[in-house]
Length: 430
Ligand code: AMP
Ligand code: GLY
Image 1 (cartoon, rainbow, N blue to C red):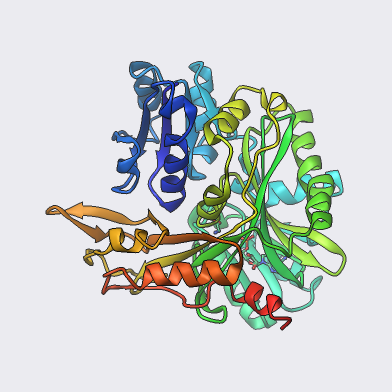
Image 2 (image 1 turned 90 degrees about the vertical axis):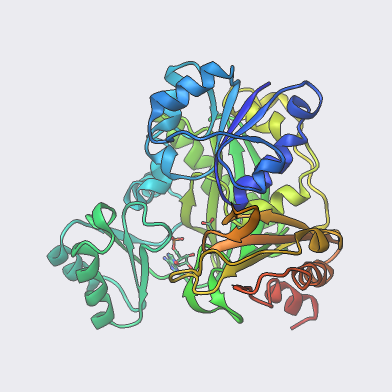
């Protein structure tokens, strides 16, 4: 079986690492290609280069290499309809159609679907002009939650403490701060609680839970400073108790998958539910139509089943035939090494050394924003490396991950030193 993986981050390195171990590649002589990939992914896949927004070019590549299925890592090509174009060419795809990817591509779409299906989430109003939005603010209490409707690279959400701040943020959004993504703004009720990420894979009919994790979105220790794409994660997240997971599937993910199937736009791929664990039970914060980054890295570190089989079964409507996937009971924890300046403008080109020494401790170092320059590994993005460990407890996994971090030689990099703190505090009875 020949597989094409699209993407270039730490999430895709973790997927490539696991796919390379799949029997499709490791035993059956299949080839794994990645576009555009990165130097870490190049250890497991043949890197190829084409323009992913040119759907015909992707389909041509797939025919020329007899690709059996395509795994799409990031959201943008999905929201852009790449999966539809490939399916029209008879190519199996792990990833939703343009219609189903609206779960991530349009916050208003998701809120309307939740309302129709009775899915627990924050109350909301969709607005399409500044006047309408300002008038709607009166229906909410502070803090005000304001969201640009479309894809905004994780930056389209503002939580405003006062009405004046909310009005200023609305003026920015309708003024074009997020381009087309801000042509519509969703105003939401604020939900109080702890957040966790829960994943399920589906072929549109069968739903298979695929693990949970907790991310660390703020750049600074103790969850301070600006939001980022994620500075570290661990899995499992004990806060996702069997009861919470059951409710998440029954009341949130299940009704969503059924609603999309009933609409004639079945969801194929991984559904990432951002949950708020409130006093009234889990509520949906948002959906993503892809694996989380860096959550994927910790899920892959625990996955003991053949990833290729599960992704292919989703792509070919045959998930019901597989047994539940096996995940290790161990905790996996990943620390993101970012380039100084992130989440603002990151320093590019910083030299990276010591990955072998870091991995000699037993950790796995996934590449996120790295590149080769004059034969040396350098930083080429905001989030650069994901130092990932596995151990019996969160505390041990944390210790192992930082022991590996300390062997890296990456002067222009930094990381948070407290990944896993909530769980460690809880395990101490704090
Ligand atoms: P989103 O992109 O929708 O996940 O929002 C980004 C972050 O904003 C979330 O991870 C939450 O921390 C926060 N957030 C979003 N919506 C709400 C809400 N209704 N109540 C409280 N916090 C929220
Ligand atoms: N780590 C958060 C995300 O992938 O959206």
